[in-house]
Image: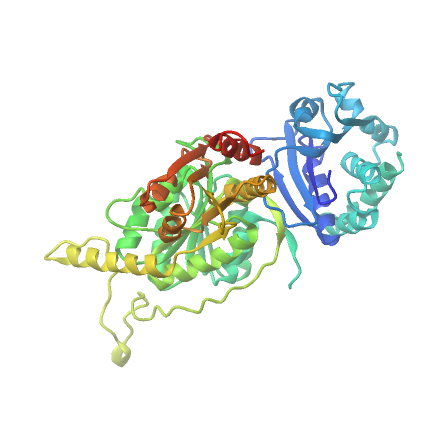
Amino acid sequence: MTDKQTNIIVSGFGGQGVLFLGTILSHAAIIERKNTTWIPSYGAEMRGGSANCYVVISKEEIASPIFDEADLGIFLSKQAMEKFEDHIATGGLIIADSSRVGDIQTRSDIEYCEKPFNTLVLEQNKNLLLNIVVLGFVIKKTGILSKENVLVALKKVSEMKKPEFIDLNVKSFEFGYSLI
Amino acid sequence: MAEKVLMKGNIAIAKAAIDAGLDCYFAYPITPQNEIGEFMSKTMPELNKTYINAESELAAINMVIGACSTGKKAMTSSSSCAIALMQEAISAMATAEIPGVIISVMRSGPGLGHIIASQGDYFQATKGGGNGDYHTIVLAPSTIDEAVEFTHRVFYLSRKYKNPAMLLADGFLGQMMEPVELKKYDFGEVDSSDWELDGVGENENKRPPRKLVSLHMGGDDLIVLNNKLQKKYKEIEEKEVLYEEFMMNDAEIMITAFGTVARVAKSAILTLRQNGVKIGMIRPITLWPFPSEVVKKYSKQVKSILDVEMNEGQMALDVKASVETPVKIEILSKLGGDVIRARDIVNKVMEMNYVGIM
């Protein structure tokens, strides 16, 4: 994670909303007048299968949307951790859902930050959206984008797609943001 | 500057086609370009324009021929193994001198292959699977902003030269999102009133009948036609070549790459430059006509050329054909959807330079 450019992998099960989480990061980056790219895994994935996306956020022009190593991994499944733990750059950060991933930490040159997001959401009688809770947590933990801009992006995208979800999205974001 | 919006490449291409004046869209679905058809299925009817989900790719491309022969702007979009099915019609289009636009978003081959991105259809696009001495104009964008611009441009070029023109993107570009400014490019309208099949009219407005044909039996017809086509291709080669030159001024190594892979190459070049390696890139934008002259020019300056492609090195054939002086040409190739990353290129260049650069 440099001052200039942040490479992010978001990965989990299909249906967890990892692609949506990634797009909000990209939308917020534009609001913050940064450059951004977003590439999804596409096609054969389905609900319950694996889903992931690659997001780049940069103050400079982004040459390649395909990167060698990620500075930040957001992993919401055990499979995600197994597949992408090695793709994190030295000094990078993994934020993982410990209720899904379990206690897998094989590297000593990166930081792990785990929270049982899924369990916490279930404890709230499911009145929260897991991916947006994680988004709130990621923003508080990393500061890669400002909270204000992410909320603007979240509201804007919700408004276009599912206006009835705006309040729930904001509530979920705030919940995640308050977990640190 | 207009506001930039986050948009998928496929959607941006569809919007650009509509901005370019698209009248008719005919296609059969295939990943990774399905968002184009999805967008068209909703938007074209709303604009009172034609959308047909054809029964096959063969039908779709022949519908393009039909619509374009009347002077309308028509296109199809597809991918790899399905573009393969259209080759006979593309040759016929070139022969009958009918403009038409084909959007090709490459997946991995050969055969039905896989839906993941590759660049395996360079030959298919530039050398054609159709018969005879014809060429398709082929433009390869490397960003979504470029995909928008070149979509406008392929419509213009296809009508200007009455020839099929193709936008050759890959699955990455189709599926990725980045901020895009949906600029409208005005290349000027091309008058088609002197050849389009718009009906002979009636009474005093009646004109002689016209025909657009791909069969030229009888006398010297086919010889005359071929000479005419070759003259046209020569003109396109002279006037329409596009390429990007990146850090070539003092370069001792020249990378050749196109499309998304050229972006990866840029990242690698920036890293290598920081380490004192004098390296640059020529990125062909028109794959046909190929920018032979600039490749030839720099081949005299550089010590070696590294061609980087997500295929077996198909474009390297055109690079080699452009070079006259003896220069070392290496290929970095990954196949079957295997992704080339910046470190692969950096490592390859270090290998080529042997020791002492980093």
